[in-house]
Image (tube, rainbow, N blue to C red; front, side):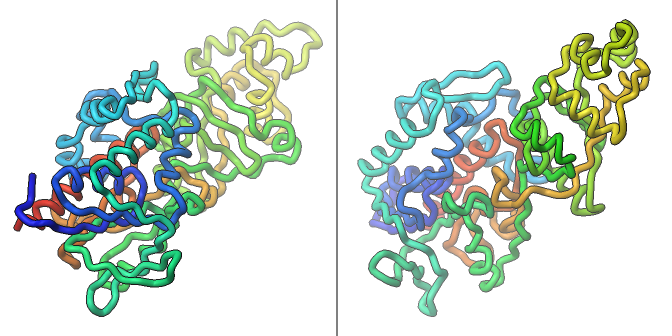
Length: 406
């Protein structure tokens, strides 16, 4: 879409959503200035790439969309317009070929974010995007101008359209501190309180267990809560638990903790064996052998798993095979609270999806569009977070172009 006369757009926020919006707009002939409060762009993207940049997921599309839970139907047309296959093609066009891992997750072959980000910023520069870092958005002045605090003091900007892509409320040191919420609330925009998503939970570990096993993983386990079962890995932390399997259940666990003050998580340490099979293995104990050594030898449980069973039992472990087998299959761990929100990978909350139109424009403030984690949606890790950030950035940009054309 090209415009008959030059138009200006301010994109505020230099994460994936804001960068994607700037790319789409500048490719259409719009004059784009991108502002960010940090000294450099894409800091959260770079952090995500430390363990391998999980761009998206290769599962069937209907299942993929379902990962967004209550926001699924609202996000469906946005994701249909920019599905995982389009994100993969975009990355490869930037010179970053991808591959699908054994879990179905999609990664760049470089397994990190920095090559992609460098190529992306180079493209934006070629397309004429003006990048202004160390610029903190302060809201609007009485004349409707955008107010910024920058290296040279406060100043106003008067773009034709604004796209806000300021992130959620976690990882403030990387740029997304959620300070924008009070600004929008002051203009009558409904903003749901931020809540941790894809975060850890506190557990009242014994001193001995915490000292010995903090930082140890529990691999190939299954977690159950509220009728849902998830396989994966969990990390024991000094404060409690974290890791991929925990994050997959984090929304349900968080809601339960908020309702009742705690939540009991069931941990299956041998998901491929039945209670009967485990009991049969445990029945072959040697005389004089300790329960700990017997568990280690008969079931090949690592020390951290045996320690977890002792924490779950609350007393000395029973040597009775049937009772021990039941505990191995469903060790109860009480989660006493959510880890601090700033430690969470993402956040729920933000501007209600009912507060924006089909083009992601604020109904309370025409000409202002939102993208990314500012909107009230959440999803598990596995590529779903980045996919929605890219897709909503693109959708907001297309909405802005349509608004300018009209």
